[in-house]
Structures are given as structure tokens and as C-alpha cells.
Image (cartoon, rainbow, N blue to C red; front, side):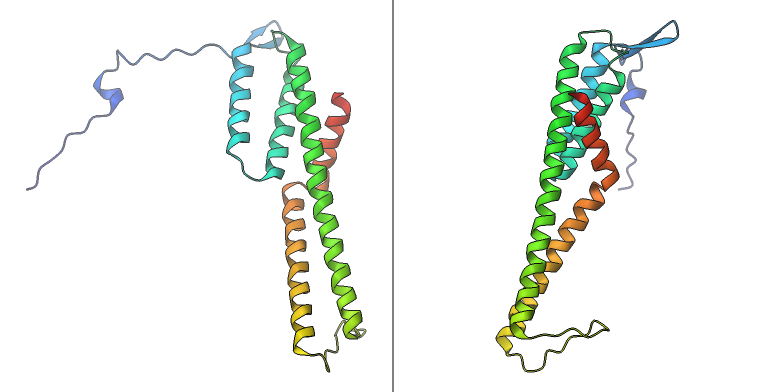
Length: 185
């Protein structure tokens, strides 16, 4: 009943047969570092896997930006054909900028439309806001109250969506993405 199991790790079983060798990613040449093609391809594969695994379009844009920034920052140390990487970094930076710009402008546009719809519904219903930002809803029908509640809920969702996008990509990061896209051309 009280049987003891003897489990060994794979490394303990045969340490001589588990020799792992890696190709060098970079080397020093004088006071400079040369990054080999293997290193660029490995890091590019990691970014590609992150991009494919990510579902949110804003996070995808940020991953594209980081990938383009990595390529452009380390391109001088690369020992292979630099033109292919330069073009791919330009495409990544431009795509990241266009996606981020489209998402942020769409969220802003939806928020403004929701604000306008709420204001028009309040005006139609005759709601007046006091100096303390209190409103008088006396005399409204149940349908008008329901419509206002629905419109305010939509406004809240639009504001939440916009805040979510701005938390992922604040203005400082968006400006860096824009700057990289403009300078990479």
C-alpha cells in the first residue's frame, strides 16, 4: 500500500547524452557588437509569435511598433543584408501607426456621437441641469427614462472603450509610434 515511487529527472538519467549546443547570436568585434542573422531571425520569430497570439488590435499595433524599433535600433550591428530588415521595419512601423490611429480616432468618434445622442435626448425630454450638475427628471414618462438610461449606458461603454485604448496606448506611446513611422520612411 505505501509504495514509494522512484522518479528521476531527465537530466539525472543520462547527463552525457543531453548535450545542447546553440548557435551564437552575437559576437564582439573590437568595440562593436555584431548580431548574426540567427539572432535577428530568432527575435523576429518571437515577435511574430507574440503578434499571432495577441487578440486585441491595439496590443498588436504596439507589438509591431516594438518589433520595428528593435530592428531599427540594432540594424547597424547586423552582419547580414540590412535592406530587407529596413523595409520590413518601415512596413511594421507604418502599419502600427495606421492601426493605432484608426482605433483611437474611431473610439473618439463613437464617444462624441454617444455624447451628442445623450444631449439631444435630454433636450427633447426637457431635462435641465442645475449649477451643482443635478438634473430634474420630474414629468418624464417611463419610455423617456428608459431611453435616457440606455443612451447613458452606451455613453459609459464608449467612455470605457476609449479609456481602455488610452491605457494601452497613451499619447506618449502614440507619439513615439507616429514619430517612428514618419522617420522610418
